[in-house]
Image (tube, rainbow over all chains, first blue to last red; front, side, top):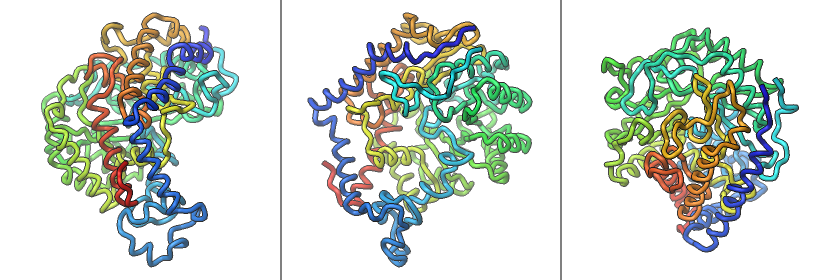
Length: 121
Length: 396
């Protein structure tokens, strides 16, 4: 039974029929149709604001170290999301702990599974 | 059997070595399911055929021999109730998988189960093999039992919840997927409360899709505003209570946080459903396909039977030369291009789902579907708007 690498054939096929078309064609079309870029613009605005609110110096620091424990304790849902966005650690109100804590076994541990792919889309 | 020299993706013109290509191998141990949900798309659910070990070993060996596997390969036992096949079969199968994969290959097994057949022995096996398990439960009993019934018409909620509690007693992490039908739309709070009360902390919603043998989703007749209200209620409850991770919102936030858009990207193939051989699907007889797994074995016009060969006699690379594969590839690529040209969400989706395009629009070479609207676009809209409010950003 022969077994071959599919790589070379697939790469050639996509060069002819798909990869180039998708990569360059979509970008070119987007430039002609500004409404197609509206979501990109909104998400960029979020990133800009997040970067402004959560400077690089906050990276890796727990929210209480940056803001003080009292501010963290009194935070309402979502209020400190901007800080978590940057540093991704510690306790952030009642919101994003799951991203870095014990929640996400499916992403980091033995329960790791195919969330986000076809099976669990 | 010739094995690849190393389990890495070599440099290639369109295949960057740092990106995954084959991410999932979907295997059908048996088409059989012990229950008979009325929205199920799978045919042959009464057949008790089982995959023979030579089929399994060839499927795994050829997947690795393709040279397209990087890092972890998710091996999903699907297209039938996986727990309807005995543990002894899986013990043999898992050993065969290990023997067929290159040394050091990381393989993660996954089951999506109706939960009704879970026993302590299954829990022991799941823990011992670190299997990712998800249960299919639609929420409170009335919602669940309306659709998820035995062949004699009996509801399966009690048995499914018994399985859920058994997983919890054993400390096994799991997620739940709930199918959202028309009648569920008015019960968002009840659904959230139910799963919270059962200790579920990872929950995904599958909108009732129109696929294969299931051609009439109850959501087709629902107003879009009702679906949006459902999602908004779930989002509000999740945010207030922080008790359940909702897959659709998590995925949306991940897209926003990463900021990555396919538009103009060097590696645009983020969507495994439109990436040829991004997903490899093998049925219990050895027939294989790629793209949306639901399509394997279906009659899909104008291509005919949606299978590109059989692992016992055909090599994946030979598939690329066939007229059927090239026709499918061209049509799916046309559909992706249509998405790129017409959909503002394309950058964060990568081209939709071919199965949904075919069954909703009649062609792979088409764009938006109900699945796109309800499972990708709407959650992204809700999460992005909420973040913008938090940050006092006016939508541009």
